[in-house]
Amino acid sequence: MKAPKTHKVCKACEREKPIEEYYMQGKYRAAKCKKCHQIYQKAWQERTGYIMPSRNPNPGPQGFASLSPERRSQVSRLGGHAVAIKGTGHRFTTETGRVAGKKGGLVRKKNEA
Image (cartoon, rainbow, N blue to C red; front, side):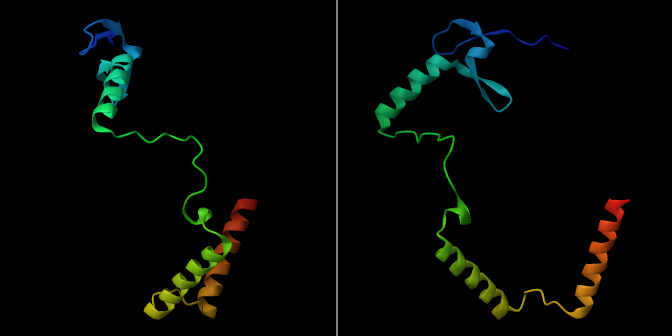
């Protein structure tokens, strides 16, 4: 088995640098060191006019949590209505309720033991 590399030559500046100075790309290290990568990225952004979106560590609520309570209720109502029209919703009967209650009781009894 090969010993892990501790240094690598940067393809941009052609200097040998510690392996920690390279970004990971999947399970491999990048060809350019972090400093050269940042220089390349800045030049690319100026050349193309594209600005990379910032990575906000706390982006805020997403999905249903981002909706107002009124809108959330409206969307939920529409979903229930669509299922009723389509006929694919679950219909509870006394028998299915009995089976579900029995399962719940068995699980609780098992957990208490």
